[in-house]
Image (cartoon, rainbow, N blue to C red; front, side, top):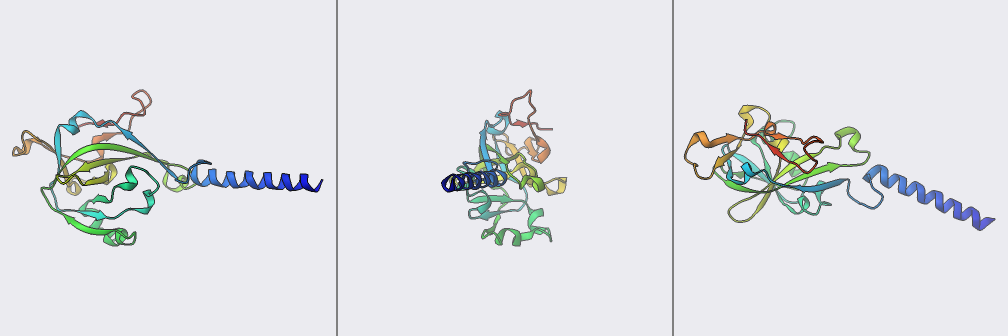
Length: 202
C-alpha cells in the first residue's frame, strides 16, 4: 500500500512537471520557447541588392533571447535602424544591456538576401507578446558575414526608412531604388500556404 502511494505521488509530480514545462515552453520536449522555419525568398528580392541608404547601426554579439534557435541564434550581427538608437526609451542601452556592442553601419553598405526565417513564440509568455510570427531577413555582406533584421524593424514612418532594394543592373538610377518598410511584406493566409513569404513593391 505504501509503495502504491509513492508511485501515485511520483506520477502526479511527473504530470505537474510536464504541465509546467508545456505551459512555459509550449512543448514537453523542447527547451526553447521559440520555433523557427526557413521560408523561400521571393524572386524580386534575390534579383537586387539591399542597400543602407541612411546611416544605421549593427548590434554585435549573440542575443541570448534567440540562443536556443539553431539558425537565427548563430547570427551575431543585428541591423538596427537609426530611430531605435535615437529613441530615448530604447536607445543604445537596450542593446548594451544584453551584452551587445553597437557600431555604425555606413551608408552605401550592400547585402544579398540569402534567407527568410519565420520565428514563432510558444508558451505562457505569448499572453503578453503574442505568438507572432516575426519574419527575419538574413543578409550577407561582401565578406560573407551574416546579419539579421526583422521586417517589423525596418521603420514605420517614411522618414525612418533606411534600407532599400536596388536593382543590381541599375544601381545608379534613383528610380530603381525602393525603400523597404514592414508594409512591403505580407503575412500569408491559409489559401497561400504557411510556407509562403510575400513581397510587394508598392
